[in-house]
Image (cartoon, rainbow, N blue to C red):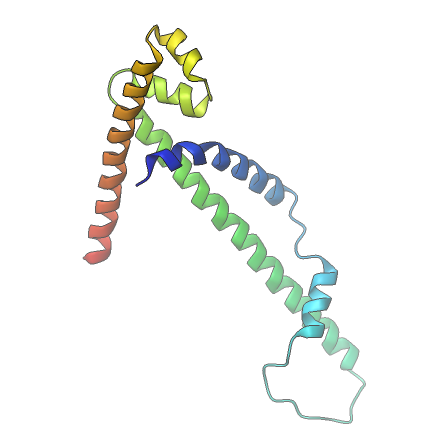
Length: 161
């Protein structure tokens, strides 16, 4: 697991979750024009039989339109929910993993990654040199990598059994 990438992704996860929460709170479904476009450019899936009756053609079209719109709305909403759950799980696991670090590493990584403090600010807060901050960071990354490795092994064991 690339812990460096996780450090960088943390801020993106928070931003993405906020955007998804906003979209879900104001969900209105697929725009009507998109549904009409999908109906116009899609090919019929089943066999078609030409009939001379036109009396209920408008009603059938309306029903088909409504069914397609509802299906598209459900798929879009499900996609947003799954994205949100996935990001939330990764973020929560990272926060859990950081809390499992030894000594002052938890607080330092929270300040560095979650609060976005600079190395100069960290060295002032913890009264150590920036070189020492780098050593702490490297140690924290090694511990986090071990935690993520254990998580991967647990998942692997589950899927192999």
